[in-house]
Amino acid sequence: MNSLGEKIRTIRESKSLLLRQVAAHLEIDTALISKIERGERKLTREQVIKLAKFYNVSDEELLTLWLSDKLLDTIENDPFAMQGLNKAKNILKTLL
Amino acid sequence: MNSLGEKIRTIRESKSLLLRQVAAHLEIDTALISKIERGERKLTREQVIKLAKFYNVSDEELLTLWLSDKLLDTIENDPFAMQGLNKAKNILKTLL
DNA sequence: TTTGATTTGTCAATATGTGTCAAATGTAAC
DNA sequence: GTTACATTTGACACATATTGACAAATCAAA
Image 1 (cartoon, chains in turn cyan, brown, purple, green):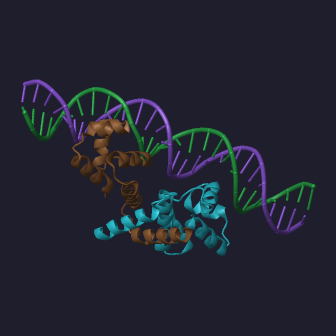
Image 2 (tube, each protein chain N blue to C red; image 1 turned 60 degrees about the vertical axis):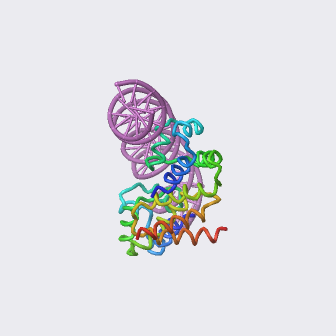
Image 3 (cartoon, each protein chain N blue to C red; image 1 turned 180 degrees about the vertical axis):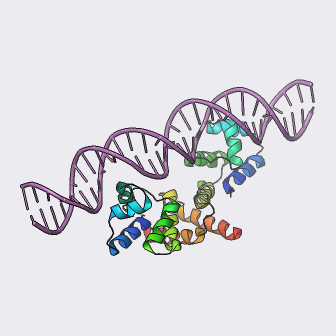
């Protein structure tokens, strides 16, 4: 349940960047980006966008994972998770 | 985007109960349940269950609305809302 | 207008989120 | 095994959000 963290770690490693370098770019402490990649902390929406630019991947890809993580976090282990997701989807559909 | 509030107001009115009475049953201030019905505040999960019993409706019905509201709240107006919901759904599916 | 229901605004207490820092641990080269 | 650097961990500080109580304002019916 930490799709984004895994994703951005994979990307960072594929580019041989250090946590220190990414942290500097996001203007946060190295410890924080370490925690984020391991799912212990979350990025803000703005940080996701900054990272997408830095890593040269689409906003949409990372933001979708980021949102999905947030949603799964909201759900926790609710037994009605799937019903809730479906209801939310239906309501959202009517709004678009 | 306040499905649960509307729902529990409708149920309460259909039973001609006063906010005061519902508040007493939930052991919270009347002002609070007023705000909850109008979507200004949220119920806790435990309060939803208590209400379902009190109103004699299924937990599932109210908890699904409750979760859906929480999810839509998490989403806010994210342009990738639908993508995020779908991704979350897919991940959840693989976990069940 | 009085009574009771509901709503609104403000405050306190608590919980959660975001970040720093120092110390601990991991890892590779020497 | 010691050094150098990367990463992780834990404790803390600060800001923001959440939850509830309370008092005052508004609404509605009699």
